[in-house]
Image (cartoon, rainbow, N blue to C red; front, side):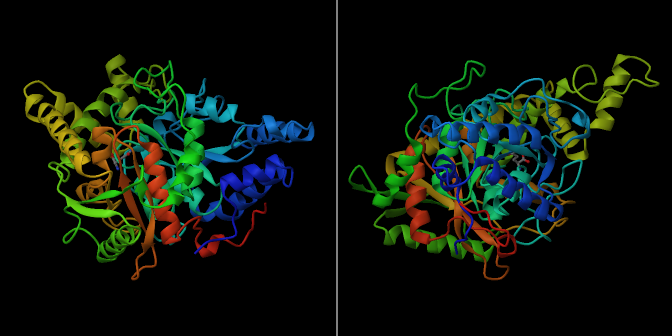
Length: 506
Ligand code: GLN
């Protein structure tokens, strides 16, 4: 099923060739936001003045006959998860703690997006401080899945996924610490890519778990995903964990090289199916779609074999120690002194102010994580929990390294189930945590992973995502394989029927 909505690359070329102005493109996207966002609630704030100023400067460049100087995605509107700093706009992290916090600086990815003259339409909803898998843990409101508004869009980057899915933008940024871009991409029928740890700067991303966080893009096609990666990737002096090749590859060209099919340097592609994604805990519709995806890889000429990765299923336990430990330290800065909320009335002393500010500003899930993390790091428990989790992380990395001797890419479902109903997992944190069983390993070992649509669940009609993982720094290969699969399966640029009506023309 494809739609009449243009892709980001189509919009960019329409703007550069003068068949559409960037301002008109923006008008149409804001019209779609006005028509649909009351139902989806993907946005926390809109940014019209800045967005129109950017569009105008693109139009001026085209009018002056200088279109050839425009960067790749000039004039293409983008939405930003509300845990990334954009100068002069609020960065709330969907928390009461930062309700009135205004960013004094741009995250590096935002500097790059501005340099590419992409209008930033607004900031999107998330689970508070990016902790969650459903976007219901926002302190403001939930976001609804465009395929079925009784269902969640996934999380934590649910707003960024839903606005791309509903055609309110063609591109958005989220952050992925344990699956927060790939899982919502899967639940919303779009593409989400978590790059190699370090390929994209984290400077200006509000930290959750610094050894796992990656700024990650959403799009409706693999080519658009490649294009936005081109914009945001690169080493950054402000982030000492960033490291990228001095000259970035041409990711769009690499993706399209996938048109050559399931070949890698003239050899048959070796695909590994991650063991353990059949039976209990995995929905029947998801199993069926993944089985069909495997057959499609075989049909395209790939060699397919099963791979058992030691520690893959246990990664979730290690993650909830490591991520919460890092979060307990990162979130210590929200104490009423410097950022956002500060409870000063009637407090007895500074410790009382810390306690009252944090009690009022943080929601229940954030408090749960801080408590878990503080406990895991406390004297006497460090070795039993944190030390063991780090060991599990090492074992997992070894088993991936071993797998790469035998296969070029590993595949499995992105999520054990399609989008679930709002409220369904709210009282059961463990079942919510299990949503990320397949996505967490890539964060723990730092490798790139991408989710793209591979089918629909017959029972519910909801989209199903397939996850592809490759060794670190092999984004070019990942995009090429994803593109080949996308073309073969024919599921690209999906927009749910109810959101196709208002057309954005090119
Ligand atoms: N759902 C996972 C969590 O709650 C992952 C979150 C994320 O990637 N930001 O920790």
